[in-house]
Amino acid sequence: MKPVFEHASHQIVVQQVGLAVAALQRGGTGAPILFLHGFGSTKEDYADIARWSAFDGQPFLAYDAPGCGETVCVAPSKISIPFLVETAMAMLDRVGFDRFHLVGHSMGGLTALLLAHACPQRVLSFVNIEGNVAPEDCFLSRQIHDYPSEDAQRFLDDFIERARRAPALASALYAAGLRHKVHVEAVRPIFTSMVDLSDNGRLMDRFVGLPCPKLFMYGDENAHLSYLAALASKGIALARIAQSNHWPMYSAPAEMWRRIAEFQRGST
Image (tube, rainbow, N blue to C red; front, side, top):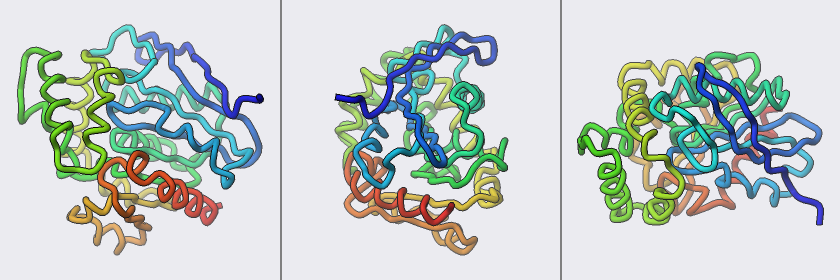
Protein backbone atom coordinates (compact mmCIF):
# COMPACT_ATOMS: atom_id res chain seq x y z
CA MET A 1 0.00 0.00 0.00
CA LYS A 2 1.33 3.43 -0.94
CA PRO A 3 1.94 5.58 2.18
CA VAL A 4 -0.36 8.60 2.53
CA PHE A 5 2.53 10.70 3.84
CA GLU A 6 6.23 10.43 4.51
CA HIS A 7 7.95 10.23 7.89
CA ALA A 8 11.19 12.23 7.85
CA SER A 9 13.87 13.50 10.20
CA HIS A 10 15.41 16.87 9.34
CA GLN A 11 18.79 17.83 10.76
CA ILE A 12 18.86 21.60 11.27
CA VAL A 13 20.54 24.14 13.54
CA VAL A 14 18.58 26.96 15.23
CA GLN A 15 20.33 29.56 17.38
CA GLN A 16 23.41 27.31 17.38
CA VAL A 17 21.34 24.42 18.79
CA GLY A 18 21.27 21.14 16.90
CA LEU A 19 17.87 19.64 16.13
CA ALA A 20 16.63 16.43 14.56
CA VAL A 21 13.09 17.43 13.64
CA ALA A 22 10.58 14.57 13.26
CA ALA A 23 8.07 15.36 10.54
CA LEU A 24 5.11 14.15 8.54
CA GLN A 25 5.07 15.54 5.03
CA ARG A 26 3.64 15.07 1.58
CA GLY A 27 4.40 16.53 -1.81
CA GLY A 28 1.79 17.31 -4.40
CA THR A 29 0.21 20.14 -6.32
CA GLY A 30 -1.44 23.30 -5.17
CA ALA A 31 -0.65 25.58 -2.25
CA PRO A 32 1.05 23.76 0.63
CA ILE A 33 -0.02 23.84 4.27
CA LEU A 34 2.21 24.25 7.30
CA PHE A 35 0.73 22.85 10.53
CA LEU A 36 2.05 23.82 13.99
CA HIS A 37 0.78 21.89 17.00
CA GLY A 38 0.19 23.02 20.57
CA PHE A 39 2.21 22.49 23.74
CA GLY A 40 2.32 18.85 24.75
CA SER A 41 0.87 17.71 21.43
CA THR A 42 2.58 16.33 18.34
CA LYS A 43 2.53 16.33 14.56
CA GLU A 44 0.00 13.48 14.66
CA ASP A 45 -2.68 16.01 15.65
CA TYR A 46 -2.78 16.77 11.92
CA ALA A 47 -2.06 13.37 10.37
CA ASP A 48 -5.71 12.85 9.44
CA ILE A 49 -5.43 15.49 6.72
CA ALA A 50 -4.39 12.54 4.56
CA ARG A 51 -7.83 10.97 5.14
CA TRP A 52 -9.86 13.98 4.04
CA SER A 53 -10.66 14.13 0.33
CA ALA A 54 -10.88 17.93 0.43
CA PHE A 55 -7.08 17.98 0.73
CA ASP A 56 -6.28 15.24 -1.79
CA GLY A 57 -2.91 15.82 -3.44
CA GLN A 58 -2.18 18.98 -1.46
CA PRO A 59 1.35 19.28 -0.04
CA PHE A 60 1.68 19.66 3.72
CA LEU A 61 4.21 19.65 6.54
CA ALA A 62 3.59 18.89 10.21
CA TYR A 63 6.44 18.33 12.63
CA ASP A 64 7.12 17.88 16.33
CA ALA A 65 8.17 21.21 17.77
CA PRO A 66 11.42 21.20 19.73
CA GLY A 67 10.54 20.11 23.26
CA CYS A 68 7.74 17.85 22.07
CA GLY A 69 7.27 14.42 20.54
CA GLU A 70 10.07 12.68 18.66
CA THR A 71 12.10 15.79 17.81
CA VAL A 72 15.54 15.76 19.41
CA CYS A 73 16.92 19.02 20.81
CA VAL A 74 20.36 19.04 22.40
CA ALA A 75 19.58 22.11 24.57
CA PRO A 76 15.88 22.10 25.56
CA SER A 77 16.39 24.89 28.10
CA LYS A 78 16.99 27.28 25.17
CA ILE A 79 13.56 26.70 23.61
CA SER A 80 11.23 29.70 23.49
CA ILE A 81 8.53 30.93 21.14
CA PRO A 82 11.08 32.94 19.09
CA PHE A 83 13.18 29.75 18.91
CA LEU A 84 10.12 27.90 17.57
CA VAL A 85 9.53 30.64 15.00
CA GLU A 86 13.09 30.25 13.74
CA THR A 87 12.57 26.48 13.63
CA ALA A 88 9.48 27.00 11.46
CA MET A 89 11.42 29.27 9.12
CA ALA A 90 14.19 26.68 8.79
CA MET A 91 11.70 23.89 8.14
CA LEU A 92 9.93 25.91 5.43
CA ASP A 93 13.26 26.42 3.72
CA ARG A 94 14.09 22.75 4.17
CA VAL A 95 11.00 21.51 2.34
CA GLY A 96 10.88 24.38 -0.16
CA PHE A 97 7.53 25.97 0.75
CA ASP A 98 7.57 29.53 -0.59
CA ARG A 99 3.96 30.63 -0.12
CA PHE A 100 1.73 28.53 2.10
CA HIS A 101 -1.44 28.23 4.16
CA LEU A 102 -0.78 28.30 7.89
CA VAL A 103 -2.62 26.40 10.64
CA GLY A 104 -1.55 26.65 14.28
CA HIS A 105 -3.10 25.47 17.53
CA SER A 106 -2.46 27.01 20.97
CA MET A 107 1.34 27.31 21.32
CA GLY A 108 1.50 26.57 17.59
CA GLY A 109 -1.01 29.35 16.95
CA LEU A 110 1.22 31.81 18.78
CA THR A 111 4.25 30.56 16.87
CA ALA A 112 2.29 30.86 13.63
CA LEU A 113 1.23 34.41 14.45
CA LEU A 114 4.83 35.55 14.93
CA LEU A 115 5.89 33.61 11.83
CA ALA A 116 3.19 35.29 9.74
CA HIS A 117 4.18 38.67 11.16
CA ALA A 118 7.81 38.02 10.15
CA CYS A 119 6.99 37.02 6.55
CA PRO A 120 3.48 38.30 5.75
CA GLN A 121 3.99 38.14 1.99
CA ARG A 122 4.41 34.35 2.15
CA VAL A 123 1.24 33.45 4.07
CA LEU A 124 -1.83 32.72 1.94
CA SER A 125 -4.19 32.25 4.89
CA PHE A 126 -3.99 31.68 8.64
CA VAL A 127 -6.23 29.41 10.72
CA ASN A 128 -5.55 30.24 14.37
CA ILE A 129 -6.98 27.51 16.61
CA GLU A 130 -7.11 29.17 20.02
CA GLY A 131 -3.57 30.46 19.68
CA ASN A 132 -2.56 33.10 22.19
CA VAL A 133 -3.61 36.63 21.28
CA ALA A 134 -4.30 38.03 24.78
CA PRO A 135 -3.22 37.51 28.41
CA GLU A 136 -6.37 35.51 29.18
CA ASP A 137 -5.18 32.77 26.80
CA CYS A 138 -2.48 31.64 29.25
CA PHE A 139 -4.74 29.25 31.15
CA LEU A 140 -2.12 26.53 30.68
CA SER A 141 1.17 28.41 30.42
CA ARG A 142 0.55 30.81 33.32
CA GLN A 143 0.57 27.84 35.65
CA ILE A 144 4.37 28.15 35.59
CA HIS A 145 3.82 31.25 37.77
CA ASP A 146 0.60 30.27 39.53
CA TYR A 147 2.01 26.94 40.77
CA PRO A 148 5.76 27.62 41.05
CA SER A 149 8.12 24.71 41.66
CA GLU A 150 11.89 24.45 41.47
CA ASP A 151 11.52 20.78 40.53
CA ALA A 152 10.72 20.57 36.79
CA GLN A 153 9.45 17.00 37.00
CA ARG A 154 7.22 17.78 39.98
CA PHE A 155 5.74 20.76 38.15
CA LEU A 156 4.96 18.61 35.11
CA ASP A 157 3.44 15.85 37.25
CA ASP A 158 1.17 18.35 39.00
CA PHE A 159 0.32 20.08 35.71
CA ILE A 160 -0.77 16.74 34.26
CA GLU A 161 -2.97 16.02 37.26
CA ARG A 162 -4.64 19.44 37.05
CA ALA A 163 -5.31 18.90 33.34
CA ARG A 164 -6.68 15.42 34.01
CA ARG A 165 -9.20 16.81 36.51
CA ALA A 166 -10.13 19.98 34.62
CA PRO A 167 -13.84 20.26 33.73
CA ALA A 168 -13.18 20.70 30.02
CA LEU A 169 -13.86 18.49 27.03
CA ALA A 170 -10.78 16.43 26.00
CA SER A 171 -8.63 17.80 28.83
CA ALA A 172 -8.25 14.35 30.41
CA LEU A 173 -7.34 12.89 27.01
CA TYR A 174 -4.77 15.65 26.56
CA ALA A 175 -3.35 14.97 30.02
CA ALA A 176 -2.97 11.25 29.32
CA GLY A 177 -0.37 11.86 26.63
CA LEU A 178 1.59 14.70 28.18
CA ARG A 179 4.19 12.58 29.94
CA HIS A 180 5.06 10.93 26.62
CA LYS A 181 4.79 13.98 24.38
CA VAL A 182 6.60 16.77 26.26
CA HIS A 183 10.25 16.96 27.32
CA VAL A 184 10.33 18.06 30.94
CA GLU A 185 13.31 20.42 30.53
CA ALA A 186 11.43 22.41 27.88
CA VAL A 187 8.32 23.19 29.92
CA ARG A 188 9.56 26.18 31.92
CA PRO A 189 11.25 28.09 29.06
CA ILE A 190 8.30 27.55 26.72
CA PHE A 191 5.67 28.57 29.27
CA THR A 192 7.67 31.58 30.44
CA SER A 193 8.04 32.79 26.86
CA MET A 194 4.34 32.27 26.11
CA VAL A 195 3.25 34.28 29.15
CA ASP A 196 5.67 37.12 28.43
CA LEU A 197 4.53 37.43 24.82
CA SER A 198 0.85 37.18 25.74
CA ASP A 199 1.21 39.94 28.35
CA ASN A 200 3.60 42.24 26.51
CA GLY A 201 3.81 41.27 22.84
CA ARG A 202 0.85 43.26 21.39
CA LEU A 203 -0.38 40.00 19.91
CA MET A 204 -3.89 41.19 19.12
CA ASP A 205 -2.54 44.11 17.11
CA ARG A 206 -0.21 41.78 15.24
CA PHE A 207 -3.01 39.33 14.48
CA VAL A 208 -5.46 41.97 13.29
CA GLY A 209 -2.74 43.61 11.20
CA LEU A 210 -1.83 40.54 9.15
CA PRO A 211 -2.76 41.10 5.50
CA CYS A 212 -3.79 37.49 4.78
CA PRO A 213 -7.30 36.06 5.30
CA LYS A 214 -7.63 34.99 8.94
CA LEU A 215 -9.87 32.53 10.77
CA PHE A 216 -9.98 32.24 14.56
CA MET A 217 -11.29 28.84 15.63
CA TYR A 218 -12.48 28.13 19.17
CA GLY A 219 -14.43 25.54 21.08
CA ASP A 220 -17.91 26.49 22.20
CA GLU A 221 -16.89 25.93 25.84
CA ASN A 222 -14.61 28.94 25.30
CA ALA A 223 -17.24 31.23 23.80
CA HIS A 224 -16.65 33.49 26.82
CA LEU A 225 -13.31 34.74 25.43
CA SER A 226 -13.51 38.50 25.81
CA TYR A 227 -12.02 39.44 22.44
CA LEU A 228 -14.20 37.41 20.06
CA ALA A 229 -16.54 40.31 19.26
CA ALA A 230 -13.55 42.58 18.65
CA LEU A 231 -12.07 40.08 16.19
CA ALA A 232 -15.36 39.87 14.31
CA SER A 233 -15.60 43.68 14.19
CA LYS A 234 -12.19 43.75 12.50
CA GLY A 235 -13.39 41.41 9.76
CA ILE A 236 -11.70 38.28 11.09
CA ALA A 237 -13.74 35.14 10.44
CA LEU A 238 -14.74 33.09 13.50
CA ALA A 239 -15.38 29.35 13.67
CA ARG A 240 -17.15 28.13 16.81
CA ILE A 241 -16.74 24.36 17.09
CA ALA A 242 -19.65 22.66 18.82
CA GLN A 243 -19.04 20.25 21.70
CA SER A 244 -15.41 21.28 21.97
CA ASN A 245 -13.07 23.11 24.31
CA HIS A 246 -9.40 23.90 23.56
CA TRP A 247 -8.72 20.75 21.50
CA PRO A 248 -11.15 20.47 18.55
CA MET A 249 -8.85 17.90 16.91
CA TYR A 250 -9.74 15.56 19.80
CA SER A 251 -13.38 16.49 20.46
CA ALA A 252 -14.73 17.44 17.03
CA PRO A 253 -12.19 16.60 14.31
CA ALA A 254 -14.70 16.31 11.48
CA GLU A 255 -15.98 19.83 12.04
CA MET A 256 -12.45 21.17 12.48
CA TRP A 257 -11.27 19.74 9.17
CA ARG A 258 -14.44 20.83 7.37
CA ARG A 259 -13.99 24.41 8.52
CA ILE A 260 -10.29 24.50 7.64
CA ALA A 261 -10.97 23.17 4.14
CA GLU A 262 -13.85 25.57 3.59
CA PHE A 263 -11.83 28.56 4.73
CA GLN A 264 -8.75 27.71 2.67
CA ARG A 265 -10.85 27.19 -0.45
CA GLY A 266 -12.28 30.65 0.00
CA SER A 267 -8.84 32.18 0.48
CA THR A 268 -7.22 31.16 -2.80
